[in-house]
Image (tube, rainbow, N blue to C red; front, side):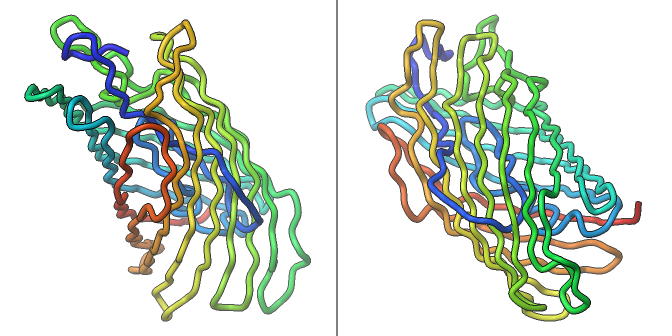
Length: 317
């Protein structure tokens, strides 16, 4: 990988995920394959735990702020990304969910080598995703709680439609300054939920993502994710969620020779509190912070808190 500061390689690399875990309870995650990848389950975050319960449309919009740094005082880089994502989902009967995600990225990459510092700002379409979730099993319907438990499977792909050839002065920018990855990735997962009572639910999901290689021979490491969440209603129009989000990734491959970036990949465990407010008219406001509490990253990397604000709107079929 070559940057605009000569031919140094500074890895912002992705600590994307290899899961360690677990259970059943929600919707399979669809994590972005990017150099600063959010852990967790964006479908659960944006659309809720039981999107198959009723036919119809759901539309969501999210703003997220990511930040990480890599390298040391002698040579390194840091990246800040503002990501805006629109989700369009349609439930067919109570069996299948179809989802399209359209992200837009604004990035600031700051590289330093000794006393020299260079900052690069980019923006553009990130990589859209298309996937389907299918219910595999559900407990019998009861009058009090409906379907108390559910297991679903998700299968989909991240497209290579995002911008991955941004350049300055005729030279392509660093891989981690690119809004999109330039690769087609495939992912699959299992998920489920269990209603404890009218006010409390357990949710969990696992996912494997297999990134492809882009036109510049860069390939992000294979990603594994696991998520576990407890959701509880606090008031008539207020819900709370507390999540554990685990991510582990293999190292990135940076060229056709198979060279691995030693400062990419590894494992992170996040603690994520979230609050949801029903504001009326079918609209839900969501606020969350994803805090890294355990890190075992390869090389020299720092993951910082991810902030999320979102709106979800549901309407009939």
